[in-house]
Image (tube, rainbow, N blue to C red; front, side, top):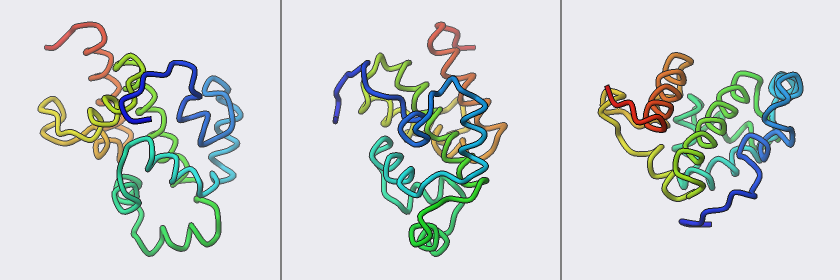
Length: 145
């Protein structure tokens, strides 16, 4: 998977929800039910980071992450944040023409346009999500101001 370009792979949103990224009603239902804990493993692999780093991005303590692993399910709020991380990674993957390694590296690296914070950590809030999406859109359209 490292550095590979693969346009036929399922999106990260699809992988963690087992639903189409375009089926908003189904995504909402899955989030409200709580995503299965294996969504965390998908995000770890996708971003190339540790469970502790995913926990930090999801605003979940390591102890709570352990409890979620035992229960096998994330809460609706945690599921919503996990979905944000997956959707942003999907967008960066498109921006990087399907290069998973480049997309993950871009998402983990500090960006001046985000006040020196990485896009991954900027996803902790809804306003941060909008800023990351806006930055990706500006990069894709060649608008840097």
